[in-house]
Image (tube, rainbow, N blue to C red; front, side):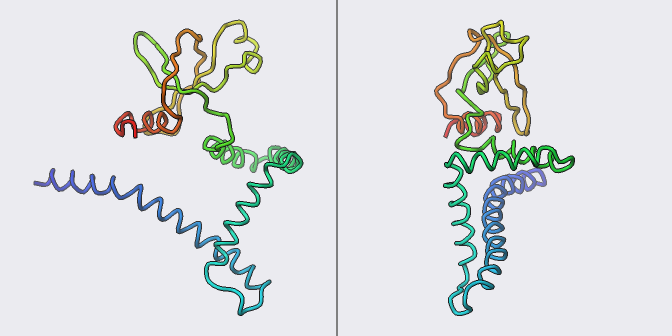
Length: 193
């Protein structure tokens, strides 16, 4: 009886947690933007023109405009110069680089994770992502081989292995990066959706 109750509670928890965390993250972003930008708008706009939700809308517009501006070469260059300054500051460089790398991993414009492949090792196949095919971008000691760098994420963890693999030991898979990442991170439990 206790085992059944425990299993049912765990199932409910696992079902609800992703939904609750997603809703909470969206709620937190909305409330935070409303607080910060709402206060700024109340200060700038006449009292009768402000309405609840205007700060959230302004936050959305700021993010959208920054996204548009990052398409301009000059803005990207200025942003890169600003990042170079941050990368030289002792404590900030470690924290900023960790956040930057994490968000770059999910960026739609970043090439980071390439083709989804299966790697054959000792008659086993592992799912991975090609991260570097250009020999000239590999360390000098790896350039004389016909190999590519492949990232092998680990299930249920943030981490993985980057390995140098001969081209003839990889096989391209017909999966999107999102499908493959979900498949690997959940140890194949979710299947292909």
